[in-house]
Every structure is written in structure tokens, then in C-alpha cells.
Amino acid sequence: MGIDVRDVKKSYVSKEGFRKRRVIEALKGVTFSVARGEVHALLGPNGAGKTTLVKILATLLLPDSGSAYVEGFDVVSQANEVRKIIGVALDVSKGFYSSLTGFENLVFYALLKGFSYSDARRRAREVLELVGLWDMEAHNRPYYTYSLGMRARLSIAKALLTDPRVLLLDEPTLGLDVESSRMVRKLIVDLAKEGRTILVTGHNMYEIEQIATSISIINAGRIVASGKPQELKQRLGLLHKVSIRVSNNARQLLDEIAKKLSIASTAVEDLGDVQRITMYAKAGREEIVQAILEAVNTVGARILDLAVEEPTLEDAYLAVVGGKSA
Ligand SMILES: Nc1ncnc2c1ncn2[C@@H]1O[C@H](COP(=O)(O)OP(=O)(O)OP(=O)(O)O)[C@@H](O)[C@H]1O
Ligand SMILES: [Mg+2]
Image 1: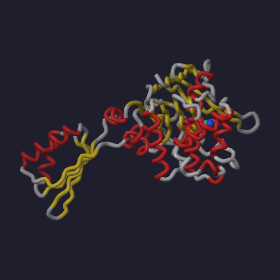
Image 2 (image 1 turned 90 degrees about the vertical axis):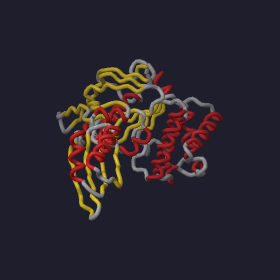
Image 3 (image 1 turned 45 degrees about the horizontal axis):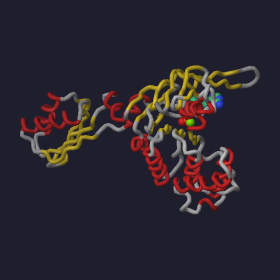
Image 4 (image 1 turned 30 degrees about the vertical axis):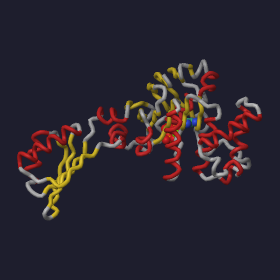
């Protein structure tokens, strides 16, 4: 198992004025696991507890109770072992010296990790090449001249210095433009292909859907759904959106389909010679197409176009989180 988290609880105590304290339960008993080699997305709205969980796995924060293991090592009692096998990128725009170049920053961190000077320089160059910063001559530029996209990549480069088997990336594409976030996503997929286990947090479903092999959705300190993206959508019984364009008998067709499928909402639009049926059906894709074809035969409709849209991960997310955020 790459990552195994069992009933982890964590509260913060914040001081609000003289003697007044407030307890915030950030994690209320979180359990989930990530198999080796997976890109696991931890999704949730603001304040859900994502960063808290990443910090616990990164041995930067102690859980109040429960246990967490990274490749079998306990994050509390074997923190040193855990640190040897993880790479962490927490706040992508923090942790670098602004007047040093990207290269110098990485050499500095590599030296802290115990590399010799020549190994530190070699490894810094390797990871800069890996994240595509070497080509951009970035190693010669001071960090303060870096764009946000370059900073995000440098932050991943830093996490890769020790060639970690497990990567913990907290919102690695936060604030990045379309192209930069695409590059970071590709990087994550490539890093996973090398056999690493990657935990990545975020809330952009479109992005996550493209890279995650498994997903947990966290809300208000609890995991509310977990599984492969496809399973998750199926388990939640999400509806397919179906659009049909026909040149005749739209109403009869709809009635006939309704006999075969469980349909949520429907609409028929008149577009002159053509009619468009839109409906939401709770069934598998094949079952839907089969039912429509049979109905077409029965009523003798002439179909011009047919589209069955898969529910998106966003639909799944909204089904369990429902747009709530702290
Ligand atoms: N140092 C702290 N002191 C007090 N409360 C905190 C602290 N850090 C986080 N919290 C609270 O704990 C809860 C979980 O926060 P956390 O940062 O883990 O959420 P998150 O899912 O990472 O959110 P975001 O998407 O905004 O980054 C929130 O209610 C937050 O306000
Ligand atoms: Mg966070």
C-alpha cells in the first residue's frame, strides 16, 4: 500500500482574544488508502481538511488520534523513514530564496538533504530538466523573476530532489494558466508512470479527471466518497444526459423510451422540421442506446442525431459535496 490513513483526527485550537479559545475540528476521522503507483486525487472544497491531511502525511503535523502510513512506515513513530521516501510540495509559491536562481535554490536544498556539492549540482540540473525549467534558462534567473507557472514547477523539482517514491502535492496547479497547468498535469502523469505513488489535492474536477487513477472526496473533515473515477460516478447513480434529434414523432418516441428507461427530466424542443429531445436517464450507456433504438423502431421515428453524455466528475463531486464550502 502506498498510503494508508486510518481514522485520523486533528483539531486546531485558535486563540481568540484573552483566554478565549476555539477548537476547529479539521479532520473528524479520515480513512482512505492509496495503492502503489496510483495518482490519487484528494478533492474537496475550501476548508475541507486537504492541507491538514497532506501535512500529517508529510510528518509536518501530528495527528491527534488514528494512524497513517506511507509505504508501511508510521508517520508518527517512523517519521524519519517517511521523510526519506517522500517528496512534498505544499505551498508552491513559498520556500525559495528570491534573489537566488532556481538552480541555486535547488542546490541549497540538495545540500541540506545531505548531497555532496557535486551531487547536489548534478541532481539540481536533473530535476530542472525533468520539470522543463532547464530549457527555459531558468537556472540562471533569480527566483523573483519567475512566473507562477515556473514557481510551481520549481516547487515540484524541489520535491523530486531525493527521487522520492511517494509525492505529496498540495494544489500544484493553483493559480496557473491553462498551458502551465497542463504541463504540470503531464508532469504528474509522467512521474506516476515511473512507478511513484502520487497524492494530489485540488478542486478543479476537469483537471483531476484527466490525471487521477483514484479519488477521495473530502468534505468538512470527512471522506464522503472514494474510488476509481468511473466507479464513483456509477456508485452515485448519476444520470446520463441524452440528446436526440428526430424529424418526426418526437412525443411518441419519448413515451416509448420512458416505458423502457427510468428518466428524470425531459424536454422536447421544436426546431421547425426537426425536434430535439433532451432527457436525463438513470441507466448504463448501452442500455440507454438499446432502449432508444428499440423505441425508434416501434414508433417509426427518423433519427438525425443521438448523443449520450457521460456524467462528469464534477457531477459526482456536486452530488456528494453539494457546493458547500467553509
Ligand atoms: N493553523 C490553523 N489554526 C486554526 N485553524 C486552522 C489552521 N489551519 C487550518 N485550520 C482550519 O482547519 C480546517 C481545514 O483546513 P485545511 O487548510 O486543511 O483545508 P483545505 O481543504 O486545505 O482548504 P483549502 O482548499 O482552502 O486549501 C479549516 O476550517 C481551517 O480554517
Ligand atoms: Mg489547502
